[in-house]
Length: 512
Image (cartoon, rainbow, N blue to C red; front, side, top):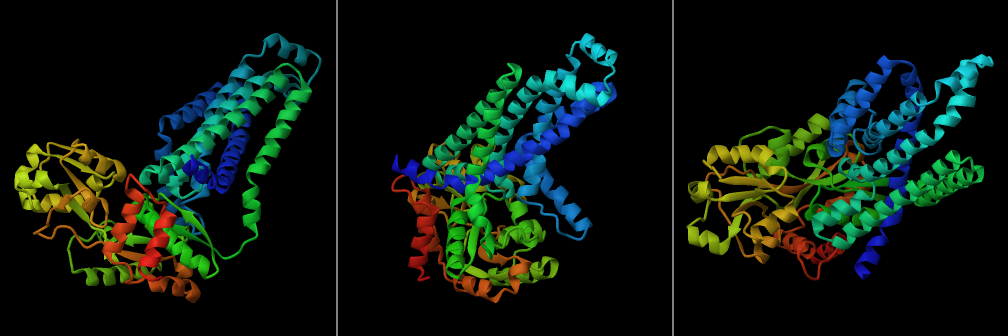
């Protein structure tokens, strides 16, 4: 219960961001759908096109719709010379607005089509203009149906807004995604309860507005509208206090425990240097480098092998210092991103098995694994099977697994523990390797590149001497043993620590 109450203390700023995003998307959806609905009710061709488009949007999974706007906005920004954010509020707003269109549009068209023709003929007979007929006859009759559509759209929008975390927009989804990755179920529950409570409260208030209009009880819909406005203002209050603060920097993180810990370690140093800090957690590998290059985040930790194979498309495997130096030169030349330095530890992809299983099967390296692979099941993280590293390993070793199943990193280890899979694509700095007594298989053909943790800073911060000076002490300071211990503090099942607590422990351990 204490953990749940502690988790609730993180709700107010995320709730505020969630409400602002949802409200803006809903209002924009209404602004588009209502006039389009009126036009559609008067023109069957427009109705077919608009309703068909809105229905098509609903067939796209919301997570995919959010992600699709990243490359679109990135290309658009490059086309106009920059200035269009590809991550955060804008792509989230566009995606959620599109999701809100269908119920409002469909109800508007259905409501207008359902008006008794005799009523409209009577309006014409008394000499009403089209504008008077719309305002005095059609609008009052269609309002209850239209508000019902807005009510449905509001609930959908609030629910889908939790997914905006994946494109760097703060929301209640931050707690849900972080909790899932770190197995902090109190955090997941607090995020879900808050999002559900918000959706139910908004649904109830818009429902009251709908009933007030339908039953012509003016006081009911006016009071409900006032409560909705007051509630929105109250929920967004944490943003007002934050609005006056200057020098806010954004620390980015991917979607696993080590990234959350390092982000807090970086954020703590920047706060001590006088910066206000925000976090963008849960970013995918495909978008985070673009986010720092575009200035959507100011700093984050990536891994040398990830940039080497995915961004630079390199297939050779030089030694680790040469690779880090080449990456620094490449990021500076192509995007202005500054490589502050390597942190001192490596988090490489590594194939791992239960030690007793590896001994029993006589497997100690990837050559042994290739020979045994037709009888084994592979578990990987969600990205690995689509990454160049997997292609490189497959070229070097004839791996032919009986099955290959992707999991989130947390559940990948669970799958190995439960023997649902025989081997996993583990991470070399993961504390669960030692704790679960796993055997890491060697790579005699050196197919997997080095994965030094490296600190990358956005172009706009590259010349900020105070900013860089706050980060410089991290370079070369974190040994892999300390990183493994910190990771395990978050990932273990008992006496679990938060990423913030693990970051403080890590700072003390390495003398920062």
